Length: 385
Image (tube, rainbow, N blue to C red; front, side, top):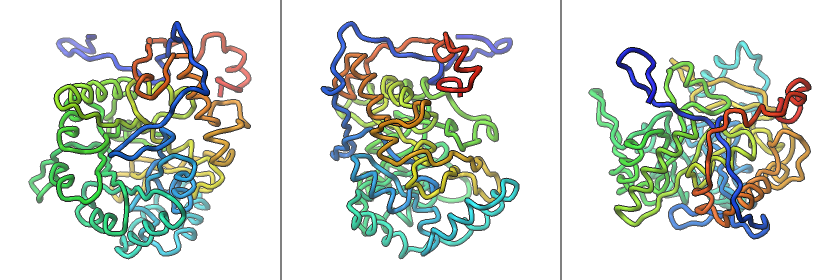
């Protein structure tokens, strides 16, 4: 424990860039590694999830990722359920000048959500060969969860910047996740949280997965606007400790998803080694040629009417979904061929499965990304970008 002022102790925390994975004494052929994970009894071949952001997931993207073995989450409070023809609106957001884009977003997101479009999008994902997974905020869950379940959605993610099992307010009845889980016909996942205590309460509410991360996303500004957040390596390990305690008490393993702060394959491996079962990716998938954002990416809180907590960033379209997941990599920065990178890291750490990878040795290594990389940094290539 360190002190940041007289009588004010503070815990030291760590992000992905400050840790490293130690190779095991016995390694495994990457071809023998199993990368699948489970949530609510369903198995997904790849431990990656496309974030519930309008720049990342539309119907076509959700179906394409499902066919490749991954999960994609469609935002039920986004453009897809506000407009019958979302492409026109997405083009307008991509074409907006930087000094106008937040105002334009606030305008287009004022359009009401249409109940009929909720069911239509779920049906379209299924018709395209995808697994319909959808998200809503806690405030919208009471209205949208039954519509999605009735239309055939298979999983629901209730997501906000910070979520707790019970949110208290003097201005009306608050959502209880425990009640929502009990009365929703499909499995409920919840996020986001970063602490042991909050995670333990979420596990006890009966959710099927807990998402970890407050503010680490590439397009998110919550940490600056609100001053709230915990670096991802520490946050994942704290939530994993709560997951392990819950499993000890109940015998039930609840999946953890690391959401945000992941920009290269090595960070996928680090997130799993810290305790995650899967990772949620936003900006990485926004780079796909198939992504609806046309090379731009923005967060869910960017169009907030009163306090925007995000921005639109240019990520550029760098390759196809298959390039990003399976390669061959066409860039040198680690943002493509993520699954081969994960398999190789797992093999080096002696892990045959995601569960075994969660027990890989992790060390504090602040010099990891700069040691010996002077020329890459000076030339702005590879790790020096």
